Amino acid sequence: MSPGRTTEEMLDDLGKTAVSKTTPVLRALDARTQGLVAIGAAVHFLDVGGIPVADAKGLETVLRGIKEKTRDDDALLAEAMRILDLFYSAYAQAKTA
Image 1: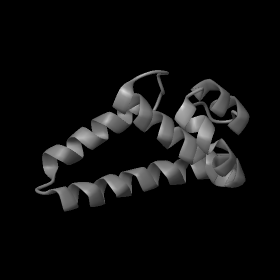
Image 2: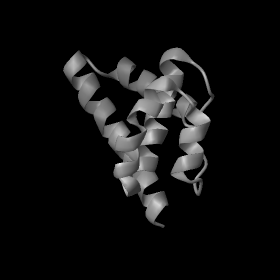
Image 3: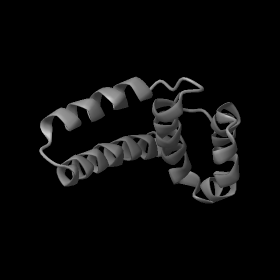
Image 4: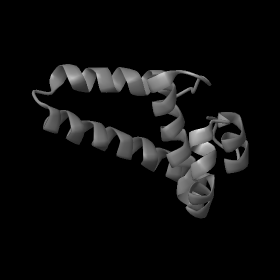
């Protein structure tokens, strides 16, 4: 997902049924939408493939590193949530900048 693209452009590119069903909810979130759509697209691509997403490979690498360094599922989840929150913050910041 390129910074500066509209939510409509990103949602149109995704073109997946699951995303289209959540579109009204995502649009209602406005400023937070870009981050949610970007994270959702990256996770979707890593999970089932489809439309390549620029951030997916980096996210996959970071998550793989977390998996290697954490001792249990609780620690893995906590660290992954922290990383996803940072991704979300970066997208939200880009939207308001």
